[in-house]
Length: 72
Image 1: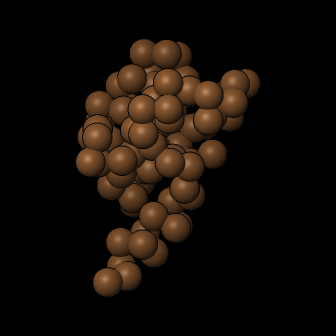
Image 2: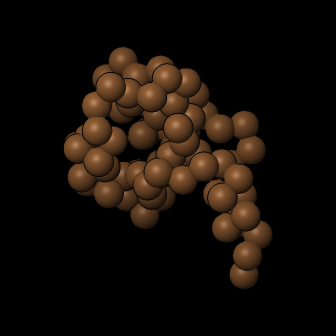
């Protein structure tokens, strides 16, 4: 499961720290500069997470993030 940080509201680094603090098993994406990958999908509803409710991220795979960066 991969998400993209909404950089209009939060940096990838800040969101990463929030998720790590909540004990999620996450890592920063290797190629997408705003992506965060969950090594193990959380047992909770993603859309119920406070970070999602605040608009800090969208669920989007790394390939889609890279493609969107290259489209004008």
